Image (tube, rainbow, N blue to C red; front, side, top):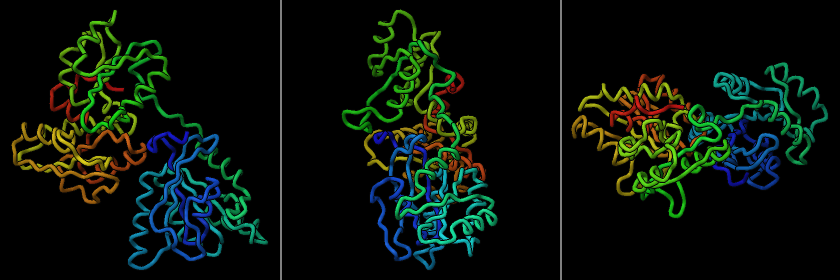
Length: 395
């Protein structure tokens, strides 16, 4: 569980005012001194992440944030970073240590509900309260949500808090990457070119996740490079039910695909699992509306150092310029800091988001829609540019 990628973990954000014990609560939940704890208000400045397993939730990522009542110029910047965490939060802990003024908590709870983020209220520092039942009742009346009473200091109520988290999470099981495309017993061929961006000696994350999904499903998975695709197909007694390829070699694989085999790509699978595939397909078709004066945002989740023939920084811009001319503008943006103003762009082409959780990718799609900008992803854009989008099988 400790080796599960962050993108596959349930993201649980901890929100509250300064000095209500958010960092102490993070330490209590993890059983480790992960976050710095101090009686001085504003000790936590940037979000602090800690991966752990919370039974029965499974792998989780706990995110400690700065107090949302921070003040001043620096405090405003801290509040902005705290708000950004909402984009990736699957669940939230709203921490309080009193009931006298809950105005900010009301605003945050309204926002959490608007974003449909499952929220557990927490009344901390109950070891120092002689009237904790009364305080809990006041919070319940004011916010309409009953808090779990805990003491992060002596771990009182932590077991109950874990149970409350599991109850709030429900039983939403992750969707299979190959849902609707592969069933138990199917032969699946994975075409996996190893370009310079791949970690040395390892497969890239979408390939690993897809392979694991197929093995868990009971499929018969075979892997090859694009150079050995023909030999791999010739060695099979019958054509594979499904071929999954890297988007960069879509056209090459399509030319060699047996008549009865379905064809998709790792990036297309990510589009369905991490985002809204219907919106992303519509965004791919918006390429036809671009002009030589258009401006395109290429958005990457990773912040890797670019190498030669990078798919986002080199190959996709080259394909766009080949179709529309050298005057088209392609801006590159990497990492979690996403531009607030998207209106200057005519299209957003996003990576597969294997490093993001689903909620963060959906928040980016939603922001693009709100500003009227079409958005697609690498695999769908390449398939459309190569004229085979309608021939690609979708989950």
